[in-house]
Length: 350
Figure 1: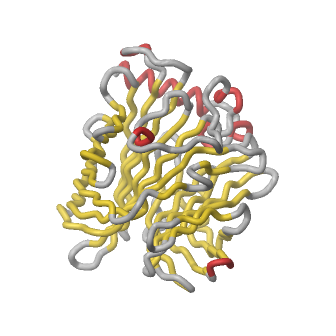
Figure 2 (figure 1 turned 180 degrees about the vertical axis):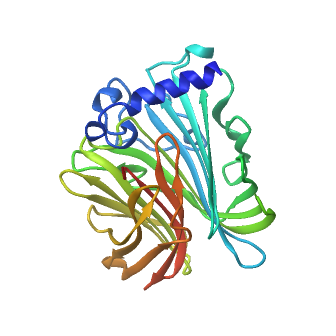
């Protein structure tokens, strides 16, 4: 009970800061980032080391989304995310640890969206990450394996559970330039890489019972200390996998001075080409009432240099994560010049 109270209080203090001065969930706060490490374009990522935590940086996450299909052809979506946030520099044992962990898990069907949240304090064994062999956990939720190419993923909420195996069928992808991903005209950035090539099989358990599922997964790893500019209020992030075998990661960061967009084109062989700021374009086509908010749930996404002009539509419009920092997160379908499936995350819609 004490652990939960400590974590809730810390998160509440972060959330109490004016949104316009810090961006979504405090990610644009210059004051909070003071003293922490800053991403550098000269850094070269190293594995398996960088699969693990980076306590010199204030914020990071391990984030898996999956498009799955059942035996009868029904489509499903699954999300698993572990966040680490440092309240102060340095390490300490037990309750003195400044590390706060937060886990989100979700399962989406065409009719329902289920989600759960877990909170933990670092230093007491309730949550953490090891790089080799890889293990990320919070309470009973776990992503683990001998290496990053072969993982088992588990989570359980009040109305859903899943137990999935992930097998990489392609290389890791460094986002931006060598894993240095710029997020604003002011130069805010993160270290960012992905594994968009997971083949997934396992069991998804819903109120109606267990379902054998299979499909594709995309895992993102990102860390920074201030990934947003102070005026950026949120983002629209797309991870799209096309029937051709190519992939596209693109994001639109919304700010008082206009949008900042960027992304990466990933060829079927896994080779990645970073996109120049502004090359990726995403425009809302339709708004829907979601949790009392107007959310852009249907989009036109264009990338002229690749001949891409597609419509992105949700499997379930009501894919709202009613967590302490609420956001929209769900599986999407892609039609137009390229066909495929993917995931869409939208934050900062108050």
